[in-house]
Length: 215
Image (cartoon, rainbow, N blue to C red; front, side, top):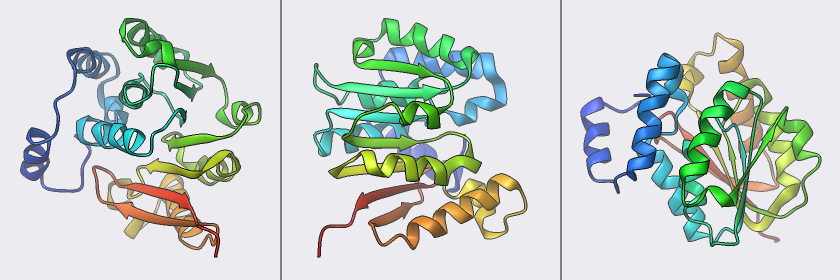
């Protein structure tokens, strides 16, 4: 469990959050068995339901995800899309995507999901706007690059959600490349006059970003 709050509080929050469908419970268990400690990269129940709620609340029809892993968050968000909605998810790991695709094929929402394998920055260059929701959860050293590449694709009332912005608390004393990249990204967004943002202490930290309304 990756969280900055006490584990008993996290368990209480999970117990009072809408449960996951059986398919996603199965996906989480297989991810833990197959990838061990890397399974911490799963968004998890509270964050997954939050992403799904955000997608539903803004009436999202097109979603872009940077970082698929085994497809948990993609499925959560796709469930909030209408039947003709679309979610594009990007990842570079064939092993991760093999599992994701298997579960997409079994999901009633899998037909809404398109997988783009390869460097996300290359994929983004090929995409047409607008996207109503963008979820960034990939390599941390590229966070600022992903943000800058995605911002022009964002719908006027769209939302960017960025995961791991507290980096297990290391943002207070950054001593690794990833931690320093997260700190630089957080400062960049906070000082970007084009947007407004809020950082939430959900799980490992998630920042929500929207375009600043015209003056």
